[in-house]
Length: 451
Image 1 (cartoon, rainbow, N blue to C red):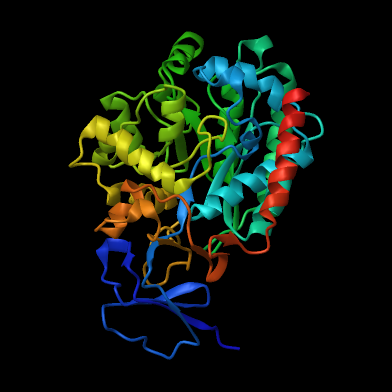
Image 2: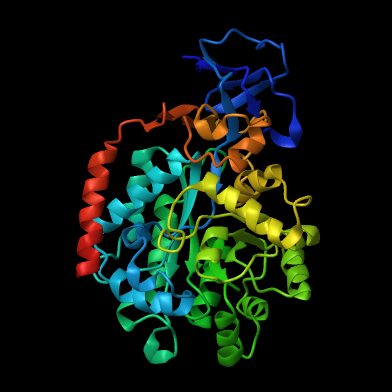
């Protein structure tokens, strides 16, 4: 049976690759974009379905390249509201150690649903907590991603350096290297998909210099090379981390990354704030990318990622919401707005445009994940789309629709498509009882905090 052709006709505005003219809309067939239409142009073949998009701004599906889904259970928790990263983590670690399979499933579903409603179609999660009873955390997340019909890069995180050995996390949250590597290998073989259209992918993600040993960093890099998967970690997020690396390893963060075999094109880093010019050049030369997390960086007062300097050197920059206990949201469009404004403080209004911020949230993020089939509206790309209306009071009087999405603070998509299938219609996720999810999630959050 031939694939159904769908014409998204005459959008109000559309954000295409290389500013291609698509004012006539786009044609979708077999889960891919088969044609971009200029103003007044008709599809090459008749389309069975026609969607009138004249009230919609059309973006590629947004791509979130750093998150911690489980943290939706500890949003706006009073004891950590005013703490910077290290004490924030030390206060939260014992709470997170009480995670259960049921609470993780609810936390992940809330995070993914919130992302999907914000126009996000692909999400990378960094899960590094595997207390007793939660050994199959990534398997749980796979099922939730499939339930919501999204794409995900699920990273098998790890912590192996506990407080007893000079690390930051408590001992009940760390694992032995053999356990980490065996589970990493199992997950890759079981779930990692390759090629265009992949729905579930797996990467290896030792948590940070202050929570894993150099041995597990080296072993993870070797396993990633052997099995051809990507690498992810936190790096250069705070000056405390830099001081830790200098005291423990006698190295700055990028030197440490190089010493454990991570400075290369497989790797993308979360935060990447405290780099000097020489380190920026080394990252770019190695093909190592950086995920900017503006809301979290402001919330924890960590600093400002040098995005424009990284891009000028040739490095890839993408965007992530980070954990929902340091954001405290999972909204990719609002994250693009935060990136726009925070980066203007560093580089000025002329350099940091709405289009540049949207590019970080789409094409840049796709490149961080090693994908060239998503993140752009172009012929042959996956039909992952986010459609927004500008019919609320906040948009009244706005003139440039693409700029209005960020400047007027759009925060919820009207429609979202993944691989040619609508997952959000009229602002609602297909097949999801959101009110029940909220009730169950609130109960789990209270239980986690209260022990």
